[in-house]
Image 1 (cartoon, rainbow, N blue to C red):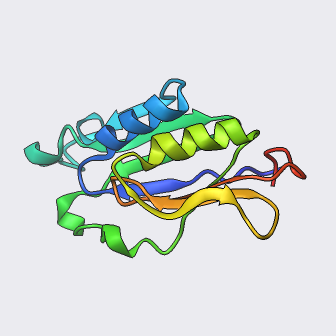
Image 2 (cartoon, rainbow, N blue to C red; image 1 turned 180 degrees about the vertical axis):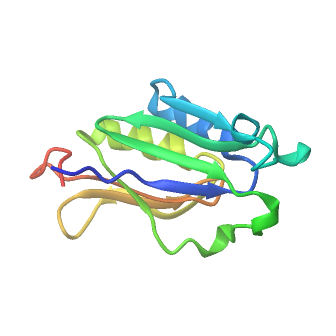
Length: 145
């Protein structure tokens, strides 16, 4: 079966955000590439963009969370206009609590994590980097949606 791997665009703070995500999820980065790594005469990279993240990948279970910094020449990402959320299906209430608490630190909680009317343990928030997340544990699915 195919996997869905979310990809996030950042305004120059992808590395900071991913170090934070790594502190919550654990694991190691599968890949980190900076814009200077792809610089060539055909594709010159401005000095102020050289250390920014061209690609970063953090495996989480069987999925990979990926991101990059958007070069200034392409304009800024509107962090308040994300129209999608990253949904996490936890394997237990304890894991849901840990992920919700860790990822929402410094962010804005939209729906506190609690038992929902539809039978799952659910919460929703925007993290301190403006990324929107949903955390869910449904014992019927045991972490699999």
